[in-house]
Image 1 (tube, each protein chain N blue to C red):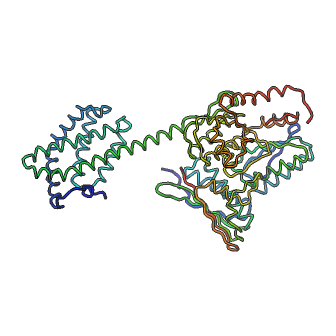
Image 2 (cartoon, one colour):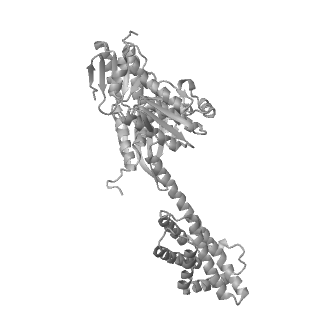
Image 3 (tube, chains in turn cyan, brown, yellow):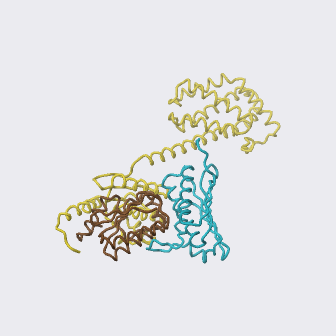
Length: 138
Length: 122
Length: 298
């Protein structure tokens, strides 16, 4: 059905702010190939941007991996943001929606959760953090 | 990636051409603040039509710019946020409260002109 | 695998007997295929079913249906029939064939075949009963399978058509220059809400609208997630430089908004759509009038 092969995995090492841009642009390309609408592709790119920046800010180094996923004929994208940083203290609090009037929303995780269909967070003090999100093509 | 900043009458117009890294955003902020101080510009228009993603850092930087130049008596207008970008921003809960946003340059200049004359445009 | 035998509840004959009888009746239905099919077609035309199709089309489909029917009786499984029914439905639904017609012709075939069995076994009442015991449950499952398959296909096609219409239709109306109205009617689910928001934002950009009136008079109730969506739509429109006026806010929906933490004082609301449009015009005209005034410091 498609002429070009759909890239099934892309991995970006996040060490500089340029990597944040690179990760989200690759995410956008993969989303477009999967058939996500431009609006949804923007949501995915924005979520990737936030996840990648968190890696940079709190762990200095990590990686973002994007993969295509399939389930019962539905296609989607999964993004995994992984680092070996200090971990997120009080992860439950980090997932709460703080009513903030400033542009800064801490880790921005509640926002990322809203943009995506599924969200999983694994973190432990001193043992790094893994965040996995899925979004399905409607 | 440097963002070109042009002077047009009493205003500065910064036109973003492509994706901005965090460092680019900081550089833009500093450049605008410096130029407002130097030229005594009354308004700054930041054209973000070319931005395909506006995340929390970009939003925070734009608010910082607005706050910092307000201290020097200048107004900020953000121009050209794309529909998909606006949608992503509100879903993420990112607001540009306190910063004026318009669809295009013409609106922005008109708005700044009115503000100069003491009218409340919104 | 759906086995016809499991559907028959009162079948007291042994499996062997049923098997033998089934084979016998299937053989009979095959031998008399031409005659029975003609009889069936006659009845279809007599009761004026499938009028959307030509006689040739009905004949062709009838042949396939007859053969699938008998095969289902023979194999005592419904898979092949199900997929045939789905296939058939996909073809005839766009032609305008309705549910009662499909159910009708299947029942007619059932009757025609049953009559033929009466004719053959009428001399031996006990044997006739045994044959009917083998035939009836199977014939009923077949009728149900075909009917249900048709209805499911119909519902699926209708859903797809509705979705397509929604995507094509522009609910965003431009009534004046720089003024858009988005009337929302009926039940809104989160998916529809998102669609409306995207259409509105694209409309704002395309028409360079400065004011948008979102009328929710026609919305009976809104759950928290859709109410949230309304708030997000207002905020997103603002990012595109447009002001939003919400009209037709019922007390119930106002309460929902308050419950999710919205400060109604900050939202520009007007009682009805007409009032909203007037307010919008005022906002749009406001700028023009004041620009003529001499400049003031401040």
